[in-house]
Image (cartoon, rainbow, N blue to C red; front, side, top):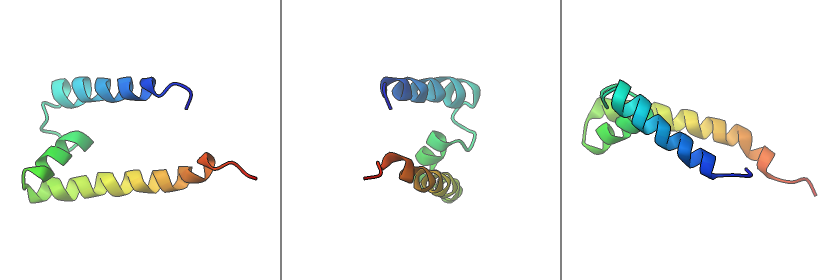
Amino acid sequence: MRRPSWLLYGFAVWFVLVEALIGGMRWPLPISSYLDAAGGNPYGLEVFGVWASGTLAVAALMLRRDFAAD
């Protein structure tokens, strides 16, 4: 990635606009489900597990793109 700052800006925009302002931190989106899981909510833990496993699956598929063939 040439400019990783765009990734951080995108994360900040997602958190502020989508999760905080639109969703009010009540929708089961990635960050709010993490906060629910950390607070001891069992449903939040399940939702966070789904988000985490989906993210790990995408990361595993994209991993081979990061290695250069020698």
